[in-house]
Length: 170
Image (cartoon, rainbow, N blue to C red; front, top):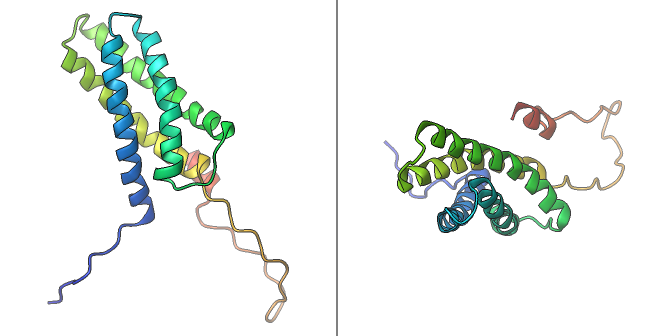
């Protein structure tokens, strides 16, 4: 029987997901608190939209710098990330409106549980899109033409799973 003396390092995707959860979870909890403060002061959909826009700007910066350690930045990144948030906004708002349809005056803890649960599910989908599309690493530029070592030049093999296939599957 052999024992390992060194733990196996986590894969880069798992580490990125852990950083994503910490950053996104922190922003999500803060958003939940702000939504609670805005409750009753404005319509739910308006409050959720306001919280979503501000938290998206903050979270996009955190995810780019911390979660994915990407060099990409600027308004194009925020726009791409914002599109993922539109789906999250629809999902969280739909979950809350569904709760209110079932129970017109739910307890605050139930309301928060539904909001945070819907946000978590939307976050998993957002991680996939941000990692594979928005903050995806650019392929390294080719070093230039190289002479074939022997035989006819074979075309470069397509990867078994490319970004387009993953995006379509998601």
